[in-house]
Length: 202
Image (tube, rainbow, N blue to C red; front, side, top):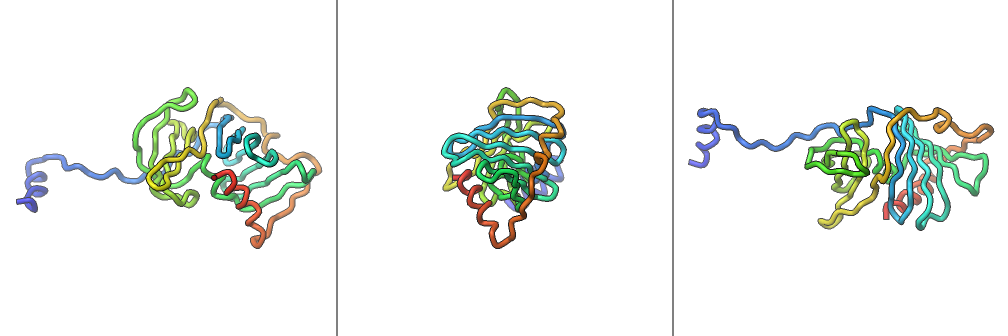
């Protein structure tokens, strides 16, 4: 009889429960600036325009402030440190930085409100950036406001916006200061960038 139930349901026109299918996670469709709290008590100021992102992370247990300009299409990050004036280090974008702009596929898992904005909670099912179960609260226009990762059945907050302003961003925010030299980090030294990413993700 159990085997006949689905057949009878279809024959009678009854709706059968179906599992939600994974969809591409929404991506930002507007330019914006926000302030967020991240790991280790640090604060992130972010500006986003198209595929370009500027992040400034400071405070908390950070040894020094970090300024980064990210090209999301290339997956590259230019990082400037106070101790190395007039020099930017270019390297692959560490996955830990991508928790603020997760990419991949997921399924809607509820609604919430963060920094005064409504957002849909997405369970991230597939992502090249996050290798643990994760949840992101994303606005209808694609702005991620919160990211949590799951470890041993418990959710841990890794990124949460505290203020958000939509609108055009000054192009100069995404350009290096005049006279700045770019030093590319070889693959053999990529651990330097990964190390800072792990610091932020602890």
